[in-house]
Amino acid sequence: MLKPIKLENKNFLSSFDLSKKEVKHILELSKNFKKNFLNIELKNKALGLIFDKASTRTRVSFQVAMSRLGGTTVDLNPKTSQIGRGEPIKDTARVLSRYCDVIAIRTFNQSDLEEYAKWSTKPIINGLTDLEHPCQALADFLTIKEEFNDFENVVLTYIGDGNNVANSLIACGALLGVEVRISCPKGYEPNASIINKARDIYKNKNLLKITNDPMSAASGANVLYTDVWSSMGEEGKKEEKDKHFDGFTIDSDLLNKAHKDAIVLHCLPAYRSKEITDEVIESKNSRIFEQAENRMHVQQALLACLLT
Ligand code: CP
Ligand code: NVA
Image 1: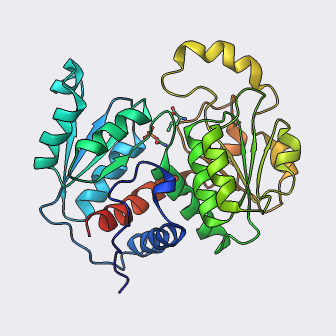
Image 2: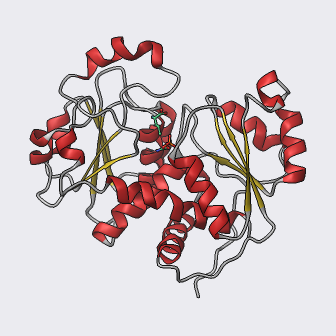
Image 3: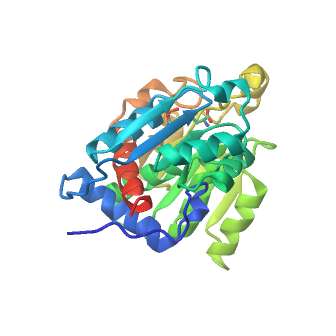
């Protein structure tokens, strides 16, 4: 029976916290969890959840993942706990790590997540920050692996805002050696330091391409991926931002440019008719709901490894 391996890093704050071998192991473990092949128990273990931003998938998939492993979850609402009153992170982190065995956090600044990790004696998981969404990327690559078996010759094209989801796709794609094309309007490119780190991992292979032309990026791609144009925290910029994304909607014209067996992914929630059309979400190419389901399986695998 496949067993969880102990991860090199205590925390999962960024996709770059895992090695290639660890990502592959987590994906393999996830597949086994999905088939109910594993009997791994995290009995009496507690997962703390701190969500400073809204969530459906991440929150519920972590809760159910932990319950499937026999553990328990404590969902801390920042508004009704002392977190919302401004208790310092260094105090909250030290207290919670005496009750919980692992803590998943969704917040704005990556530096706040790092502050939690600095003071917590237990693993901290990034449940989304403005910079990264690494749990999402694991589910995305599991969905791609299920479709194509392997990552060799897979071209993943992300069209839209160079946001947290794009950043984690780039990082995880680099670890797995997948060709990643990002197409975004000028000025909305992904994080420069993540691009540089990814390019270092790819070495001299030119497998990370950033372009402002969605049609050329989509051409022959095996996976078309998009996310909202304005992320949580950018509500005030929405109208202004939308003006720059003309031509960046994944519609049937863009889908027709991709490989005939291309799949379409979206981390959800989606704004239908903005970044993606209703027709494409509901098309035979869409694997969006499998992708959402996979959040739970990869998080089961991640929890099992972090608590081994
Ligand atoms: N994809 C994702 O993280 O969804 P939620 O915001 O619903 O958690
Ligand atoms: N980029 C989006 C992802 C939501 C899951 C956001 O940060 O709001």
